[in-house]
Length: 120
Ligand code: 5GP
Ligand code: ZN
Image 1: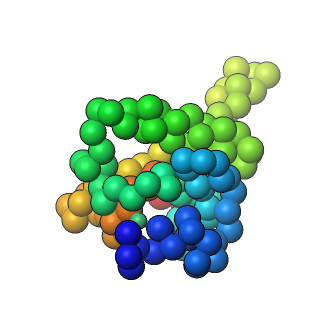
Image 2 (image 1 turned 90 degrees about the horizontal axis):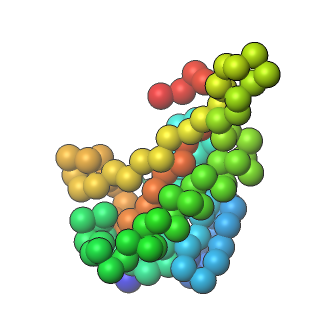
Image 3 (image 1 turned 135 degrees about the vertical axis):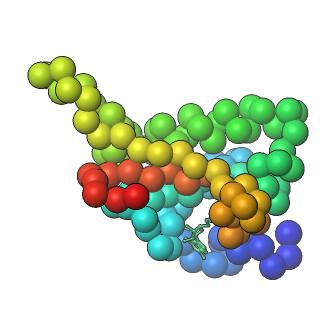
């Protein structure tokens, strides 16, 4: 897609700190992190929004979520059950959709946000 910043990152035309790349998905650090860990997962294929994704792409969406879990683990922010029984750590996955959903970049992306609090 011409003029799409995330397509350009996927094509290597704009630099980004890439944390994962495969045939269908790319993940990179957000340029303005909202928390100690803030990554974005995108499909290489351009979809404007989550609402442009059909049921035929359910597997792709599932892989984005599974990758979020793996990357959070790698980044050290997966939930951990402590010996005292307390659960610590954790992260958010977020897909902003459309203007009222707070979407700013119109290439489908999933935020993975975590790390030691405080952050919002
Ligand atoms: P949205 O509000 O669309 O869900 O979030 C877009 C995210 O993309 C924002 O958190 C913003 O900081 C990030 N972002 C925008 N432009 C760039 C860029 O050129 N590189 C990187 N790495 N992140 C970007
Ligand atoms: Zn795009």
